[in-house]
Image 1 (spheres, rainbow, N blue to C red):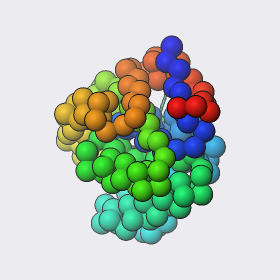
Image 2 (image 1 turned 60 degrees about the vertical axis):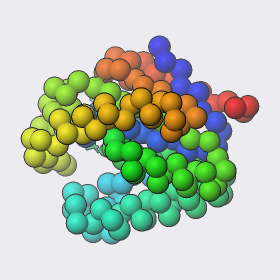
Image 3 (image 1 turned 120 degrees about the horizontal axis):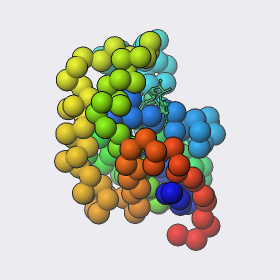
Image 4 (image 1 turned 45 degrees about the horizontal axis):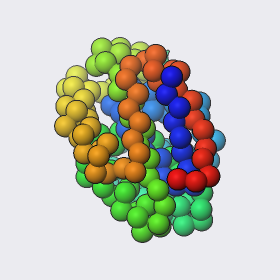
Length: 173
Ligand code: GTP
Ligand code: MG
C-alpha cells in the first residue's frame, strides 16, 4: 500500500491520462476547495468543459488560482492531465515563486482501462488517438518527473494500487 506523504501546505500535481481517475482520486482524498481543475476552469471561461479553444484562458485562470492559494498558504491540488513537461514546468515555477514544495501523484492505468472508462462517460467524447498519445507523453516524462522536477513523486501503478493509496500529512519535510 502506498502512503502518500504530503506537506500540510504546498502544491500537489495530479498526473495521468484522460480516464486515469484524477478527478475521482481528488474527490476521494481532498476537500473540494483544495482542488483546482482545468476542466472546471474551462467551463468557467467557456461554459463548456470540452471547449479546447478555451485552453489558454482556462490555464491562465488555473494558474491565477493556484498562485493565489499558494501565496495564502493553502494546500492546492491541480487536477489536469499534466502528462507534458511544459505545463508541469509552469506549475513548478509558480510553486517556486511562492516558495512551497511540490509533490506529483501519477495515476498510471493501462490504456484499456482509461479507454473503457472514457467510452462509458457522458462528459467525454475523445478521439481515439488521445489516450495513446497522452500515455506516450507520460512515459517519456516519468523519469525526469521523479528525478529532476518534483521534490517527491508518487507513481501509482494500476487500479488496485490507486485504490489502496492513502494520504497523510507531515509537518516536517
Ligand atoms: P479527465 O478529466 O478526462 O482527464 O479524466 P480523469 O483522470 O479525471 O478521470 P475521472 O476521475 O473522471 O474518471 C473517469 C471515469 O472513470 C469516471 O466515470 C469515474 O467514475 C471512473 N473511475 C475513476 N476512478 C475510478 C476507480 O478507481 N474505480 C472505478 N471503478 N472507476 C473509476
Ligand atoms: Mg478529470
